[in-house]
Image (tube, rainbow, N blue to C red; front, top):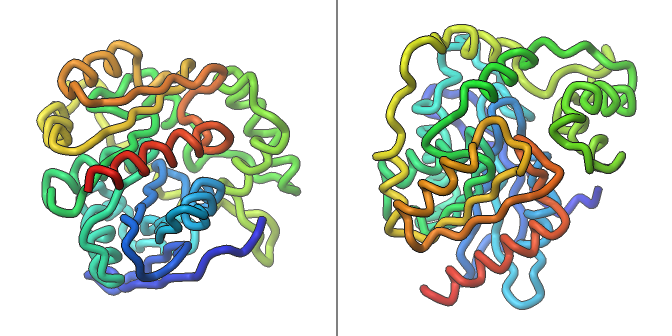
Length: 293
């Protein structure tokens, strides 16, 4: 993996140190892109996309790929209750303010898409467009239960290759077409090398946020949050095998946002890997937004 990014560290409101990968030119006329990952994922997941967008020969742009608190190279929070979307939204705003980004396109995978909706509701002037990767205003119970079954509970592999095999055994049904390279990249975003061997790339206390959910109660209505996106272009990517974003929810999203663009990725579940042809699809989406501004 080429080292095409700078390390960016920013202090959160409570002093916790946050990390982001900072790709591309720091200044210029192109709209920057902010990449927000899934619940237990991190900036590693966006490397291929961020590299392509930041080195685009026609219009290179700045791309920030964030690690939420308790993930990747950001500090772990001593209070797991702070692993909360409202806190993570505030953290994102601190990072954007620190680097002087006043308007951007947001690419959000799963939890990142929820934060993108919250960003647009709280600060619509910041958002030029949103890519929602396998997430919407309705989260299917089956997917939530599956995520809760493994976050913070994975066995510790001896090697990254063994880690890739663990993930393939666990999620192979969702991703039957994944290559060895894709499983290996997923493993690199799940574990990291430490003095004692491989360790999780996230605070295992994240599992407590899921265990605290009462899945018997009706979930909050997120459609009003989604409706805030009607003023900006939206691209929805859905894995054909997804158990978190149903095809019905994706259809309803299109009805409520007539300008929405949707892509279904065959052979992938929750959440599709943003590589290969999806990189070009997102580049085209970003270019269309640029042409409008």
